[in-house]
Amino acid sequence: MEIIGTGFIARHTRRYFGDRHPDVTLIAAGVSTVLVNDVSAFQRESTLVYDVIRRCRAAGRTVIFLSTASTGMYGADQSVGSEGGAVFPLTPYGRHKLCLEHVCALSGARWLVLRLSHIVGPGQSPHQLLPSLTRQLLAGSVTLHSGVSRDLLDVDDMMRMTDSLLTGGVRDEVVNVASGRSETIEDIVDGLEERLGTRAERKLVDMPAKRGEVRIDKLRGLVTGFDDFGIGPGYLESLLDRNIDELADNARRHLKAAAAVG
Image 1 (cartoon, rainbow, N blue to C red):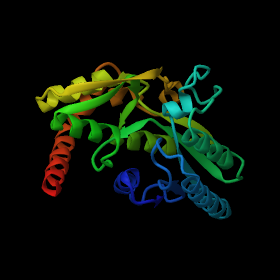
Image 2 (spheres, rainbow, N blue to C red):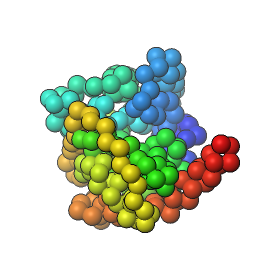
Image 3 (tube, rainbow, N blue to C red):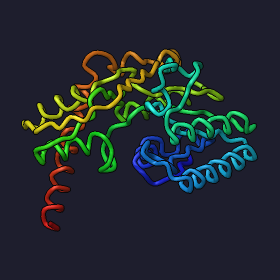
């Protein structure tokens, strides 16, 4: 597999796939956070996607575009959270990703769009959800947006799901790659605190409830052995157990470095 990018998902994809699926190009570069609303960043990603699609179309390759299943895509009241349902993106990031999905679909190349939930695993950027929460908890105070929930998926599960989709010949489709479980921010913090052995002061910020549900019926039907992934009740606990040591180690290093500078 050809992987374009050097970030968190690109590194895991390169490690997992190696030389498998040699006729596939996965774009793991560009805008990677829902907080971005910089037009120039969107333009750079669009240019990259256009160039890769043209090259893949000419070479008969399949291009994988990583889109989003975040509330920026599915958070509107009218959204049902499914690939075939109407979507009304709430953010510039969500609108940008939806536009690029349509570019892929109309390009004439073989394509696969993966709408990713919040992917969790080793090597995440410090600003992402679990690293940020862990760092705040170990510092003794955490700011929470009440009414917020997140669909979390372990990066190893994402890799296995993607592998199964490609092996099964799934092409020219939009697929939610997610756990299908909307975890409240309070439950996520409770789980982190339990594993860290700490209790932090919680500062609650009232936010309009955005509990965008991500439906995974399509994913479940396409991925071989889906039930073996353990996605269901207890998935949050399993995901935190798998990642807590690295989250804690990285948070402590960050806090120690910040203290040294301060």
